[in-house]
Image (tube, rainbow, N blue to C red; front, side):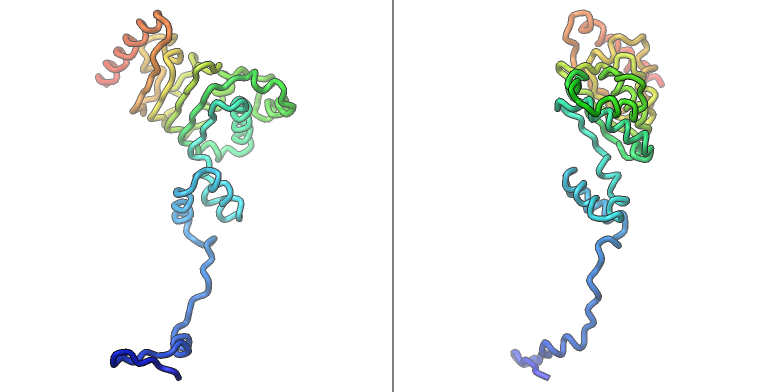
Length: 229
């Protein structure tokens, strides 16, 4: 056995170390607990999470909730199509709805998909008999999301207003961001149209004089009623 002497201390050689230490077999990352896999996914962006989920069934089952936790349908020309696709996916697998906690909608327009060949088939898969309006498609999607916590409707020229959608049907919603048009046409009290779990309400200012007068009083009444609960 070859040994090394250094300042009065004798160290065993490499061969002796190998013979005395039993190295464990290489760890299999797919055997990690679900909690650790989700922590790994928490440090990745959505695109990388999707790639990781495709590596094996073990990771897909573990981190799929992370992949759908935040859904952002921005102002792309296919936003309307994406809403229908998501509704269709939930129709096929209802467990997906439980994964979605945050939803953001941008300038969504139905007219942007007039030339999409797959539209008719997608409409049927999403549960519609005829092609819905942009507003109807988002309202249907929201009604499917029983675990939604945050919803944001950002639009400048989009066709989605949700002026008749009852947000009170979303019991887990705690954060809501909508334009004034989504609220001003509702009958008072506003509390009847908002979820009881709501903690943060963001309302974009109205663009016309009528709504500029109506909105503040509507919100004041809501605050008074909510405070008295």
